[in-house]
Image: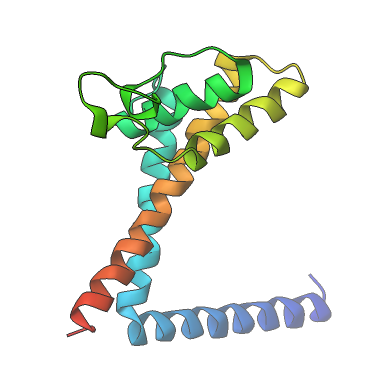
Length: 154
């Protein structure tokens, strides 16, 4: 190892130490934000692992309905939930009670990916699930923001 290599490696180690100290100092001064970042990363990884490791879609009713109606918009067939029917003789106030914006979002994804002749079950649904995992991850920050707004950080 030449003298120039030793100087370069010493400079690199010094810069690395300075870099580490800056981050450690930031973490010490901003512990709350650091924890939010860590929990957001953990939450995203957890959701991503579940998204990619489970076959099918585990979802609440609203997601199911959005997927069904998105499928109806994109492909013309679906099981229409009562909330999207124009008339519901059993419960008139129940008909047309959902927005079409969320299903339209799914329909755009479905139709766009179908244009490239991608398989619905092996590509399109997993892409939608990954988008839902990203969306759920943003809920971590949104919940924190809502809590801060309600409590005014007290």
